[in-house]
Length: 105
Image (tube, rainbow, N blue to C red):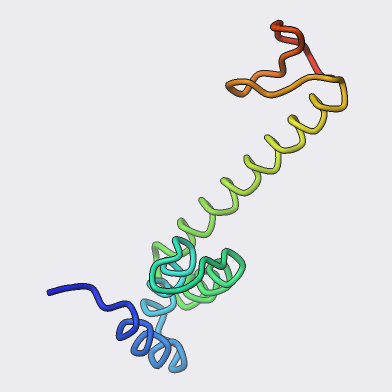
């Protein structure tokens, strides 16, 4: 059977409207990964949080992972900005300047 995201989206939205925790979890995953919908991480987190509150046991784990990934990306962006402010550039997660690793702090 082939995947049909539009049909899945139709039925998942109906189930979400009836507070079905599993449907919220699956729809949250679709929004997290942009499968059949435009990727929307805020909407994904909202659905996963609602699903977890209703007892879906994997939703809280998924939402926690998304938050950890978001914080890691934010930390990497802060590090890169600090590196650039010192005249450096990021190469393989290291702050470099003139071919040498520098400490941007």
